[in-house]
Length: 220
Image (cartoon, rainbow, N blue to C red):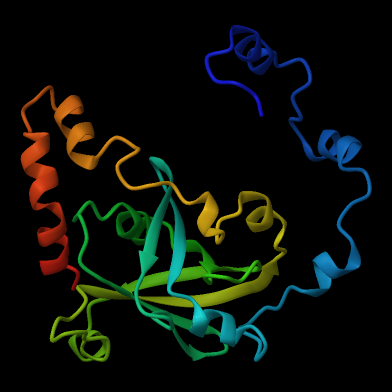
């Protein structure tokens, strides 16, 4: 693997002479093009064989676009937390979070969204592209109550394309292999980061000390 803080590596990365700036340039490198299976796996709806992937997934990454740029947001709950309402409609409740509303603000201005579903132990991921609107209809939010708590809103996603992503990336990463998991405490803690970036305005130790209880009390 390439090493960090390598001046020669930085020099090479800054060299733009071989940048691929258009599709013609890309095809000179990726000359074979996609194979037939890469194209035939795409459906314009939630096919009956794709539905079980969504229903088994406890985690997805939501990508959105707005005037300030792109954003990705992790979304997770019990498997099936994204409901397949029909072959063209997904429903994603917005659970309690940090109130930044980055994704929702983007969707309010540009409805295009993408979802990447992951299933623990499964190498294939599922990719969904479509458009979304944000519903705060009380009767709809009530359908997604957990522990007596309603989501603030529900994303109503109109599906445009669905396809599986092959397992190569997850195999290379060893994501589901417990032997590759990072031990707790080996990375800077949220409190340490906040204390540093706030120039000590936030007490990092106090933040970390209360974090688990605070998150447990505010999951929903």
